[in-house]
Amino acid sequence: IPVVSTLPMQRWLAEAKLPVVIAGSNHPDFDLPSVDQDYHGIGRHAAGALIAHGHRRLGLVLKKVLSSGDEATVEGFAEGVLHASAKADISIRRVDETRAGVERLMHQWLAGARGPTGMLVANPHCFLTAATCVAAHHLGAGRALLSRDDDALLDYIAPPPPRYRAAPEAFARSVGSLVHQVLEGRSIVHRQIRLVPEFIPGAGIRACLGSATAQR
Image (cartoon, rainbow, N blue to C red):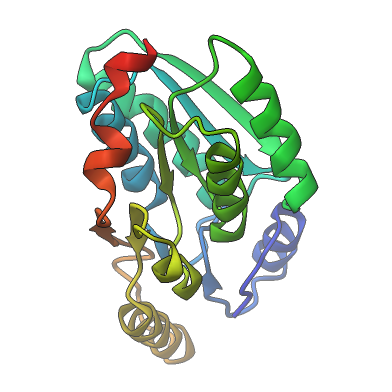
C-alpha cells in the first residue's frame, strides 16, 4: 500500500503485477486500484468560488514535482474557470515546499500590480507562509487565500481560513475495502475511489472573499 508513490514506482508495480492499492491517486497510464481525495473537484470548486466572489486573477501554488493529485487539481482549476464562463487569468506556480520558497513567490506576486488576488495553495504549511506574507505586507484587503488541504494548525489562525477537510475514517475504510478485494482476488468494480472533502468556509470567508473588486 504505497502512501506516496511516484510515477516510476507505479510503473514498476504495474509491470510486476503485484497486488497493490495506491493510497493516493494512480497515474492515468496505470489502472491500479487507488483511493484519494477528489482533487479535480477541489480545483474546480475553488476556482468557481473565487470567480463567484469577483476574482479574475487566480493563482495556484503546488510543489515542484507534481503528483497525480496535483495534476488533477490543475485540471479541475482550469475547468472551474471554463465552467464559470468568466474571463480570468490563471497563474500556476510550482515551488519548493519551504518557507523561503513560498516567500519568494509571494513577494513576486505581491510586488506586481497584476498579481493574483485569489489563490488556492496546496500544503497547509505553505498556505500558512502565504497567508502571513499577505498579512505582513498589509495586503489582505481584496485578496483571497484558500488552502487545498486541511491541518489542525489552521484552526489556530484567527479568523480560521477557508479549506477543504478530508475524512480520515472514510479514507481508511475505502483503502481497507480495496485491500480485501485485491487479496481475495475479486473483480474490482470501482478501482479508483475519489472522496469528496468537506469545504470549510472558515469564519473569515466574507472578509477574505468579499472585496475582490477593490483589487481589479
